[in-house]
Length: 142
Image (cartoon, rainbow, N blue to C red):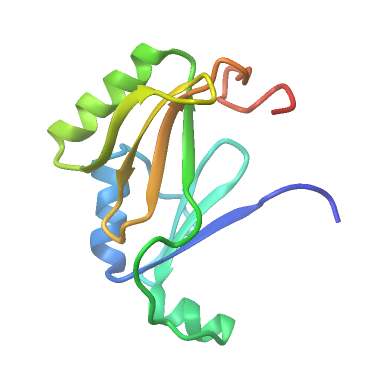
């Protein structure tokens, strides 16, 4: 099996509201494959999909109930510390829930966390050890 991710699928409580969140707060555009049942956003080299949580759980044959920390985060890496601060200022102005303000972190970077409408955590980070190409893809091994 090749080491890759094609789609990150998030189960959401309200597809319409969650889709609007990613469009309005993050400024992302839906792909033409999106419809009233599922939303797709093209990221750099992979897709983010939003699908009703109960239907996603049913498809995976698992219980849709659960709360608290999900055990994973999603990360958006920037090229500078200043870019992290700019993104946080923009998201705060748009009413996005700030979970942790950006700060210097133990591993040598600078990061903070925001949450989407379903409490999925997004780390917005500057990692001085990661090199990003023009499209934002990691070009070196982490």
